[in-house]
Image 1 (cartoon, rainbow, N blue to C red):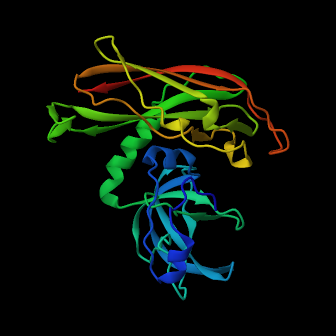
Image 2 (spheres, rainbow, N blue to C red):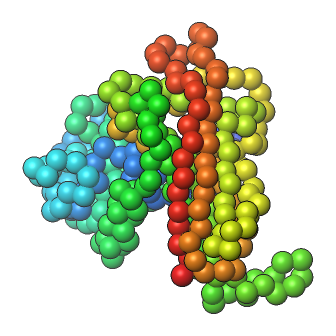
Amino acid sequence: MKKILFPLIALASVLAVSNAKASWAYVPLELRMAGAKYIVVGKIDRIVDGIERNNRTYDVGAIKVQQVLKGPKTLKEVKLMWPGPAPFALSTDIKFRKGQEGVWILYPDKEEKDVYWASFPTDYQSLKNLTKVKEKMKALKAITWSKPVEGLQLGAIVEQSDLRNQKITVKGRPVKALARATAYIVLRNSGKTPTYAVNFPQDKQLTLKAIGPDGRELPIALGNRLGGGKLAKHHFLQLMPGAIRSMGYGMSLPLITKAGEYTMEMGYANKRKSGDLVKGFVWTGKLKGKATFEVK
């Protein structure tokens, strides 16, 4: 199945130990939700099948749907696939059990029809996080999108961390900070055909300017400019109609010390074409957009 993030784990450690530890690169919950086919509240009612693939066994359980947050409201049951018993357990295996109940962020399996995965650590949320998930859904729907250019639109997701009760020092000096904010620039395919967007850090395709409530510009750390190498197939991100994809990594704003409304001016540009790397429409052009967020 397709994963936005790949576990950072050495093959040698997998072979050396039966339960190696892995770390996962961070992805905002909103982005996982944006890419999901379905988001449902429900319980694994029963185990319905087992699938053999690549010398491994996978269990398939049936989620009895109690509430649909994303997808057709008529959805009553969804098949969920996860790694079954194995001689050794990979630390990236995320397993479930009969009777497990919660919020499921589901991605389709590439081979089995009508079978889905919740294979990223945040793809399963306990019922106590249902309110949080619904708030994230509202945030997704509230994204301010740019005008479409050949079916592509530009927007942003901003994550805030409250720092009011934390002791913050900068260069050894205490700072009264209200929040820390990270902006994720996202693209949406609002057209009717699949589209490739190029995400090649060396081209410095993304721009971001943030302006505080006092009208001053804030310096931005453009994390998307890291990386090296030649243009390759993985730099072409396919967006199906309606899909949302993140471009680059999160861009950190300076510590926020003033309450009020912040404005971001964003840009994305691409002039590269596919060559022989991918087949299909590769978007070229420029997008400009604006977004605001409030710190109380």
